[in-house]
Image: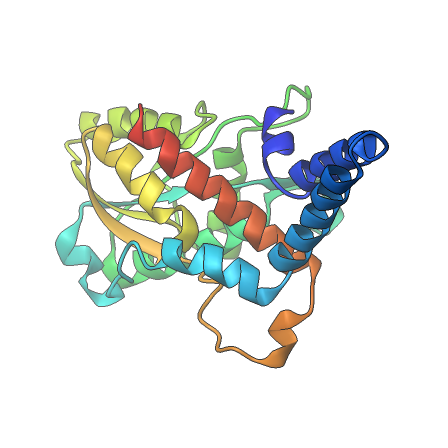
Length: 246
C-alpha cells in the first residue's frame, strides 16, 4: 500500500485528490496541486519523461561482452521478476512474466556461450495455496523452453537483498564466489550492490534495455508503457537511495 502511494500513478492521484479537497478554501493552491498532478502524469507517460528517468539507471553498469562470461565467473545467477498464474497455453502452470522471460532468455544465451551453471532465485509472492516459488517456474521453463538445466534453485527469497544473501549461501557451499548476475538494466546497479554485500564478486549482465532507441516526435505521446517504465525507474531510484542509508 505504501509503495502504491509513493509511485505513479497512485501518488499523482493522491496529489490530485488533495488539490480537489483544498480547492474551495485555497483555490490557487488547489489549482496548482491538480495542475501539477496532471502535468507530471503527462510527462511520466511520455517517452521523453521515461527516458530521462531510465537512461541514467541503464548507464550505471556496462553491457557484458558475452564471449568473456566464461572466463570471468564460475556461475550465472538469474533473478526472478513476476509470474502469470494458470497460463492455459502451458497446461495451467504458472509461468514467468515478460520481465523474467527477458532475463531468462539472456541467461540461457550466456549459459550456452560460456558453459557456466545456472542459479535461479525467487520465492513466493502470494499466500495462495496453489502458488509456487518464482524460481521453481523459472527452472521448469529453462528446461522445457530453453533446453538449459538449472543447477541451483533458491526458492525462499522475497526481495533483492534476500535473493543475494540466500543465493550466496548456496553458491559458497559449492565453492562459487564469482558470478555473472543477470537482471534488467535498470535494476542492475541495485542488484550488484546487494550481491556484493552478500560476499560475491559480481560481473554485471544487464539486459532488457528500454532506452536504446532514438528520439522521434512520437515520444511526446503519452502511453501506458512509458508510464510503466517511469514507475519502474522511480522504484529503482528510491531503492538506490534506501541502499545508501542501510
